[in-house]
Every structure is written in structure tokens, then in C-alpha cells.
Image (cartoon, rainbow, N blue to C red; front, side, top):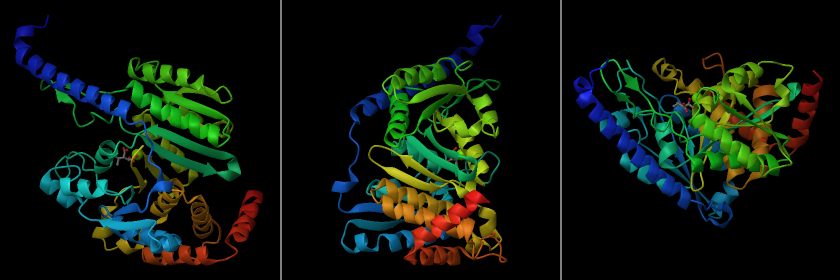
Length: 408
Ligand code: IPM
Ligand code: MG
């Protein structure tokens, strides 16, 4: 039998800790209830794009992505519809110095922008020389309430055309840095699902399916084991699905889902996915690998007021230490830039950029980035993409390559 008296202090501390977390979450729910309006980029002038370099190779690749965006939005920059701003200071050195995931002055600048194009930021883990501060990504997603992490994955030849809607603010992440060591032997973390948080991401996935004539939405949880939170997510999905009778839906558990993604006979049957945070983190890496690696994928973090577009790979500090930063591959962040263009109301420009990326990195490949001096530099790659964009026959060129690729 446990002597409760012996753990009196520990229990008291744990209760206080838990109470504080609950109150924070209840407050967040109230904020979500009030945040119903989506920002309208059409009526904004200027739309302010903040460019955040980040750590490691981040500043090198974002600089080139910025150049590509400047080229595509040259007219809009001239006529004042678009403003591009550099945001300094989201570096691991600054973050460690002030012991914050995002320094206050940086957050203030970030909040003056409407959308961010962001390079990778270092997420320190236990054992590294940096203090164990929270991931800047995770913190920004929470501060800006970027509740939807949208990650498309395509392998046309195999009929794969997936779009992942990963819940991006709650689940295992929201209190991921707020667990408690109750005693020396007992560590506990917390997972959170709210009605409002689940509803908004599930609705976004179904709305996307409806608007884009998608056939099916697949809901992924582990509701057979994690019954309260995942159970709630699944229950809400069932309710929302009934509002979209023309869209088929099904639900899978995360373990078998990861298996089905590598089953060539079944995987093309999937279409749109929606799931809580951690499952989405894992499944989207797997999916990106099927497409050709995490470096080939772009990632959009969407909220009602702000949005952030980022490279999905890490900051590759080793490349910088070894003097190879100028050979870093800018593909992922440029893909993110294409998603940004689409999101803020320039779908035609986004489509052109996607085509140029296909031509430069998959079809024509006049130069190739290898990450080493035997390959092209980041700057040469961006130049190549801009030259390809300048081609008046870009679309025909892409179509020809694409038809060949489908036949091959
Ligand atoms: C991602 C990344 C982040 C996450 C890390 C860097 C904290 O893996 O964007 O998927 O876990 O969300
Ligand atoms: Mg991840």
C-alpha cells in the first residue's frame, strides 16, 4: 500500500500544476470561440510577407527563396500590394540568450506581418550544449494559432495525390514542454483535444475536399487505446462528416495507417487525411519520404489570422560548420513559397513556380544540388528556377515533360 502522507508534497505540487494547465486551456478555448473571422488577403494592402532566416542553412536558402518570390511578385511589390520584410533574431543564439522559444522583440515584428516564409530553426534536444528551450516552430504555431499544418504529397505516376491536414496546435504538442516529474521516478506528460480545436481542423479538411472535388477524407487516430482525447477527435469527425454527405470518409488507427502508406496496392485509394498533431508529424514524414524525401515537401501552417510557410527539413548545422552552406538545397523552402503564393491569392503564380520546380529538380535537371562542391550552389539553383520561370513556353514545356514522365 502506498503511504499517501509520504507523497503529500509531490501530490500537492502536481495538483497545482495540473490546475494551472487546465485554466490555461479553458482560456484558450474561450479565445478559439471568439476567433471566427478569416483574414481576407484580397482587401489587404499591403500584404506583409516576413522572411525569417532561422538557423544553420536557413538564412542561405531563405535568401534565395526570397529572390524567387520577389521576381514573381515584382509588379505587386511595385504597386504596393505586397511588402517583403526581413525579420532578424530568430536564431538559437538569441533564443538561448533570452531563454525563450521566440524572443519578445522578434514575436512583435512577426505579428506585424501577415504571412511568414521561414527557414528551419534549431530544436535543441536533451544532451546538446544549448539549453533545452522549446522548439521555435512549435511556439510560433501556438502564438499565431496556426492550427492547420497542410502538407501535400504527390507521386503522379503511382496515382498518389494526398493532402494531409495535421492539427498543429494541440494534441501531444501543446503541453509538450509542460509535463511534470511528479517524483524522481514518475514522469507525466499531457495530451489535449478540445471540441473547438478538433472541429476547426476537421472542418477545414472537409471544406478542402468539397472545394477541390476530392472524394474521400481519412481520419487517423489511436482511439482504440487513447480513448478520451482521440476518442473525442473521432467522435467530432463523425459528426462533421455527416454535414458533407457527398464526401466519403473512413477512419484508421495510426499504426495500420503507416503500414498502408507503403502498400502499393492500397495507398492510391487515400485522398485527404486529417489527424491530431503527433500522428500528423509522423505520417507526413513517411509520406514525404515516399515522394522522394522530406527535402522535397513544403509545409503550410495556416491560422485564421496568420500563416507561416516553411521548409520541412532541419537546419543542417553540420553543413555550415563544414563550410558547405552555400551548397544547401533550396527546393523545400521554394516549394513552401509556392504554397504561400497560392494562399495569399496568387494561384497562377504558384502554379508556375510548381512547374518550374518540377522542371528544374525532376525533369530537365540542367544542374543538380548535392549539398557538396560537386553540385550546384543554392544561388545557382535559384537562378535556374528564375530563368525557367522567364520561359514564355513554361507551361507547354512542363506538359511535355510530364507526359513523358507518365509514360516512362
Ligand atoms: C515538423 C517538425 C517539428 C514538429 C519539429 C521541428 C518540432 O518535425 O514540422 O514536422 O515536430 O512539428
Ligand atoms: Mg516533423
